[in-house]
Image 1 (cartoon, rainbow, N blue to C red):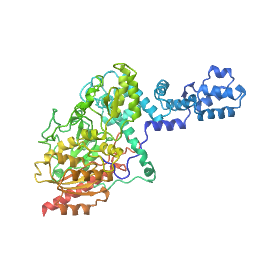
Image 2 (image 1 turned 60 degrees about the horizontal axis):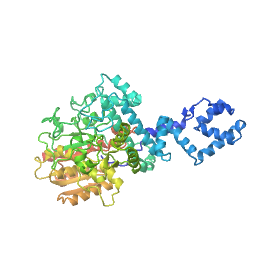
Image 3 (image 1 turned 90 degrees about the horizontal axis):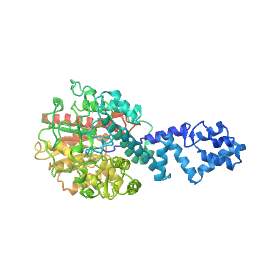
Image 4 (image 1 turned 180 degrees about the vertical axis):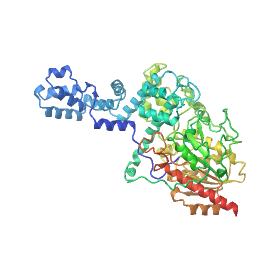
Length: 617
């Protein structure tokens, strides 16, 4: 999905919220001991408990307070003079002062003093972001070691998240309460754990719930990377956009598969109606398409699988009660991408585009095999997102590994692997890890080489556009049924086009695109699609519009009269208010951005109504 009108939301992370809490409430614990206690040094200097506690609550260390008292004349010093001296120390460049200013806030955020000191020793105390990242990594490693099966990831070749596996090593629990207790023991908050269990379902394993929580945390961290640039624009908005032209519900008998949200579950494994080279391939849908939804014209809608509870039931109800097909693209390439698709396409006689994709990391990037350590058992990468790890992080991982001759200890392996999974790092040399480059992401997602390169497109724009795109091999597998249906070519209405994942899929399937009317808000993405159209020598017509909200019904009907109608309406509206990482405005389809789903519904309804009129002529 692509950003539409307004850019990324500004989503505060857990760290930011904790910092806010720290700044608005007294410190309960410091490196000098609990507030309200008095050390022997202070007793000897005649300092009262109340004065000591006050200084501790302000965040000053015991050592700093001792120095301030000594330099201001001892026990008879005025409190205001001691406080002034403490503030002078706080603004100095001395190591004890700067470290105290860093240690206390981090402890106040919930990190242990042992881990804070360890992180400062390894990374210094100047970069709070790097320290926080290191502390989060330590926390994940500790959670992993506290699980009942400590080596659950070591032997899971199909691992996607810190504790996820679709095929083996399940930690099965008898009921919802036991899963909740296990998650609390792993240091997840009760509220976070309960919400995750509610979203994933009562019969889910603890491992799958952890997968969901980790994915949400990563999504929040990744999206915040790009949020700052849109902060000023977002603040100027005085009120939220109303739901866009939500179409009136037609009176029809509810489909039993989607009338009750409890029946729409994320399948495990997430293979939809079947994927290549895997058992469970279906020739017919488990729930037939309602007559009102049958094509042509065909429609194909995509969004994130792990949306808030009730969202997929609502999406389905507005798309003619068609049952969603949930698919993880790890079955089509070497990276995960869990998505839901609602469409009225046939499912029989699907086929893969050729050549077939690479299914493992080392198949996709064979040069990494030389450097890949035996203790890194990953075969798949995580979901490809919109930002990458910093050079500072990869350099520190290298330094950590180089401290050991031969294979590093298990604790170091776990810590390194946690960063590898979080940031999709690959091995490029001895003890050298690196994030994926944009061209490597293009390969994993099924796009041509240099699809997003050049033409004034920045490296940051490339990562952002690719992170929001379709996985071409997955989409092409679904669209492959169109080839025999349209031997003379197809007319496509492409909504929220992005970098043209649907168009690339049709091109790779060798389905002639006679007409593509594309609607995409991003100038960068429109330029990418236009370049692709020219570079692949397309002979059809490409018409580009920028805003779905301005594509009115009259314009749609005029375009259909001009080109003879549309055979396929394809797109995926923005997922900003659906993604698990958005804790501020994860309000579902009523959010500022994700409410654009109703524009898809409006346009699709207009196309289908006009198509029916054209057939009757």
